[in-house]
Length: 376
View 1: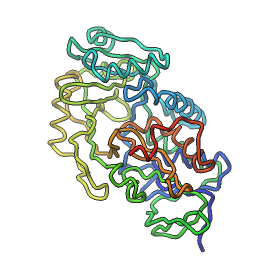
View 2 (view 1 turned 90 degrees about the horizontal axis):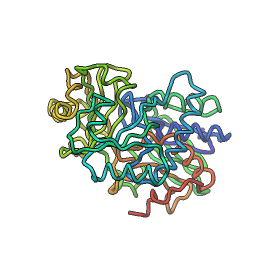
View 3 (view 1 turned 180 degrees about the vertical axis):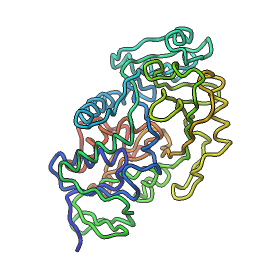
View 4 (view 1 turned 60 degrees about the vertical axis):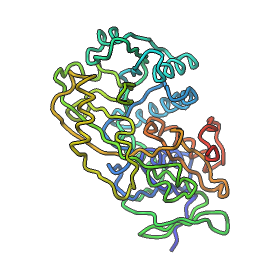
């Protein structure tokens, strides 16, 4: 027998779990399909901590979405037995007049966000874990912090269950196709399901299900490091805001100690390795470790103690590093959220709301024009 639903969500990671939750809360008969566990460590929604920040140097247009995401994370946390969002403040730092610092200032000014501009000396006096070059500047925004991604997924799936959703893990989607009545038919390695609408939130695997994304949502191997601080008190959450840093070696990001030993950080687009998500080097190497350790020794010397942990994950990058959130042009019953380019998880709560809107109404009140598929 073919099971029938109102909406099927393909992929139940950060974005998919939020989408299933929002749909279920609206009384929709929804099925979420996930090929791995819930949560799991094979894609883009794991790693113990994920940055949340409102000062968004990438583009000021993200800030209203972040404000709504903040509200939704707070509401989700109120119904969950674990803290999801930890407030530490956020720091965007780099050369004065550089794109990271200037972009952060621009977002703060345009959206009237509380913030301070600090010299590197002032930053180090307040937060001694930072030891940046003298000519660097930092934008501090007090509402930033970090999310606990695995716990966020659990909270969304628990809420979805409470509202009657069906979620199936360890079930791989083989293919999907449109039906004659403008619905969808999804085949997995366990069975066949039909629905009026399909939402694709498959992360690094999205292009395998949406031909239009083949050259647009490109998976990349990413590696994170956790190093034991030489001065542990400098890297505790109340003394070490989450950060983004532009240096000659690239753009890096990091977190205070949380959950496991060591302060966590990584380099955006780590070694610029485009990969097949089905087959790539998942085990971090000594070359990965050397790249990250050299950075820490120069810019966070008090944190550059012994290695505690290395972990890989996947970015899925678009050509302009902005998201894809849209319905498919010739199949409006299918919507897709993909290409989050290494900065998407903080938006998951509001992406779920948007994808529920697109599935049920074909449109949303949120401004997502800059994320349209046809811009490419």
